[in-house]
Image 1 (tube, rainbow, N blue to C red):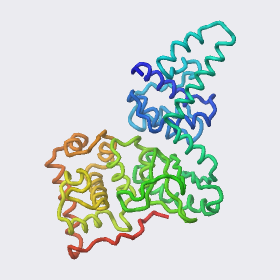
Image 2: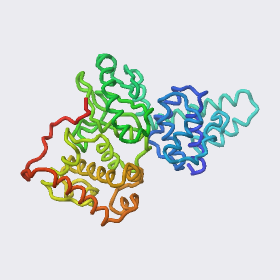
Image 3: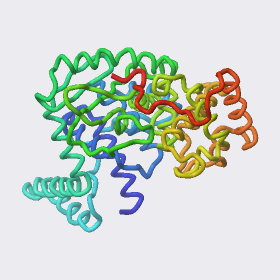
Length: 387
């Protein structure tokens, strides 16, 4: 498909998402289907991310979308064009070979050919959706039948009958204090955000993640995690990662996003991040920023140690540069983050980058009592904020 056609299809999809005349369930399916897609037009990607954040709150208006984009740093976006009637626009052409046939059928005066063309195009669109997004649609269907509870900022889903509704409500209520704490640290950047947490015993999640905590995955403002028994548990960085997406948009790099989420959560398995990182520093010696950014298995063999030091480094950036500096790093698009990419995003030099990191870390080392070099943090301590 050529870029011009892809551009038109993207615009059509965004108009459909903004069209309150279209059935909400159909738009929800379209929203889920487009979640893994990367738009060819950067503005379309930005607008989609704002629509994704606004959709759970109810009807999307032109004013709401404009305010949300402005708060994210895109005040000059032409919002009006996304609210032009999607149904009045030309139907997206699914394939180049099909487009000529459909165009001819739609231009015919026959009362029979137009409905047939629309039906054929709908079937083709459905076939494409099932081909590329079949797994997403099946997951959506399964989750649609789950029982759910809602609170001010949370929507909790569990398989019907797996957990008492009162247990789910208690979990959502306790989670509100965590949301308030996280949002306050972001300067109340998105106090109206809604986070969806889906507990699913059948959802395929990697058996371990790079923090050593209970595994989870975050897509936009939706968190998915496993359900074991009747206890609802989730590490605090999961909520932080979802809230960061709602407030700052899609991250430029998944690794930086995870470190930023741990920083926002505020501690590491019950210990303050800086003090916990200082203990790792005593065991391993000082590691430069370049060592944090390299692939796992380098100078820092443990994924958990690397995540902790990465979160501590984000804490240092926040302390010296404020949340604006953290946001710049979070938003910078980096396939494989390195010193050159990081210094460009932060507007600094490699020497200054390492100088501040070393100075910040040594301040923590100076403030803690000496501990044996072979000692480490217990691996089974629960993270504060987890339920």
